[in-house]
Image 1 (cartoon, rainbow, N blue to C red):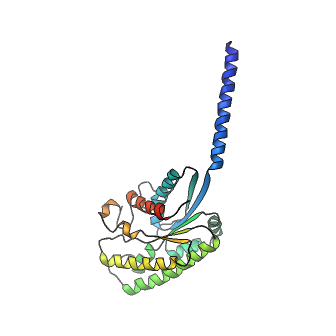
Image 2 (cartoon, one colour; image 1 turned 45 degrees about the vertical axis):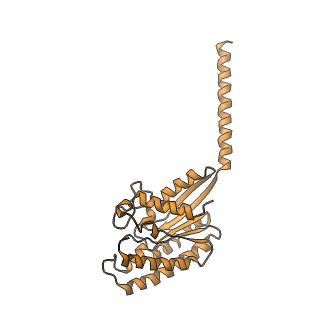
Image 3 (cartoon, rainbow, N blue to C red; image 1 turned 180 degrees about the vertical axis):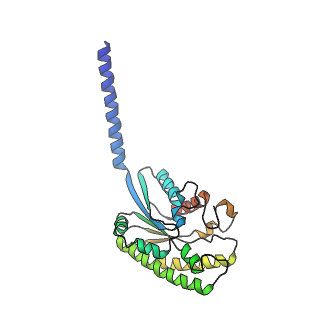
Length: 238
């Protein structure tokens, strides 16, 4: 066999391999479904404190895509540092945001920590029960309004409503406040079967705070991983 013929056979062989690989990738792409997650929240959803910078959403995305080989999950994160529930309502008045909601397969909402802290003047060192109670009323009204919009803009997607965690787990007086707010969140969540309440406070009730927190409020990568694992466990992702 001369070199010319051998070279021609080699080229044909390479073309066959490349074509076969392209067909396999095309079939693989057809079999892979894309799922879109749209998330709203404050710095805790933004991922502040996480060395990777992606927070629990980044961890959740990785976990989901590793678990389901035939489904590719994408996440759009609308979280803003310092955001309150009123800020989410403002975001939802933007038609570009509501357009994204219509295409979402899952919606995550984690809001309320700033509402609580700011209602008491920005912290909990000196507790004013009347101000916190009023702040809770405003928050609950805003939350109900947010959920109403989410449900109207997307009539099918599950809404994962993440509960608040007490960033000061060894302060029983603080824990009582956060549990009281969570009780109201649970009550609002019961308004529609598509809304799934995701408990987070019990993730950090025990153990060394330094293990899961990057500062007095925000979590580190291990802390955010725990929230991602809870969402993976309770979120019923398909």
